Length: 371
Image (cartoon, rainbow, N blue to C red; front, side, top):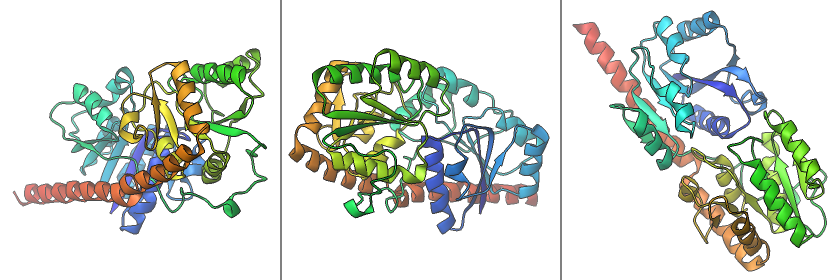
């Protein structure tokens, strides 16, 4: 089986991390995956070693790619323009939609104009996202399939497996808070700086690692604000850390007795949460869906009151100041992800749905041909 995944954004983020894992798993089951992106935001290194990647905005080139490759299915991720290309290519196979954007106003353009193409399913990564999509879609089945993680790659590393000399370098006698993602409004970096400011006022044994943001629109605004607030000593920024190095980063956070922190306002899933947990790092996040679907309160992490800097800091201290609690959460977090989010489990769910859609589509095509 051969499938094409179309998405506008070649980013370093959860959607592509999820698809990287899926493509590797698909290959083991005889499914060849190809990717088509229209704009590059620094994510090529995540995808190019696992599958063919097309990067173009040219309508004719895209239409020709669809025409010449005889895909068994096309999966469209939040890209309304794709239906124009599929229609012009006269593609007759099944089309599946993935709805990943967690904001209704931004999701709407991608789910309202299918150009007479009838998607067979809308796949979403959480129950929260299902609720969002159900407002916009009518009559198309919605399937919840969580993002999966390669638990042979993301795992608890031993001390000997950690490259101590590689950035970021673990400082002596400091506990690390990891904040991973784009530097933008939705990820809510201003709240991160407010948290850092409060922690700096109260203690000197904590360092915050911000991982990512090299291509973010607000990176200069963030950098300026970090300087103005005199937080460069507590908030260390690493704009580019290769995806392949992230298990080592999580290992250092765990080794320090630290945690990861999410200040995000909304997510459709939250890949960094499951990456962190399977590497044995507890998560502190806002008490909102879908975070509440992923992080088990008091077991794999702690949830704070929405937008409350004071409560977020309180929950961080609870984990960092209680080594026994940290150890229990570390073990429970790893078990939780291995039991519920391994690529073997959720990847198999995706394969089963994909095969059913392709088989049913072929049967319908054969029936029409026989008439």
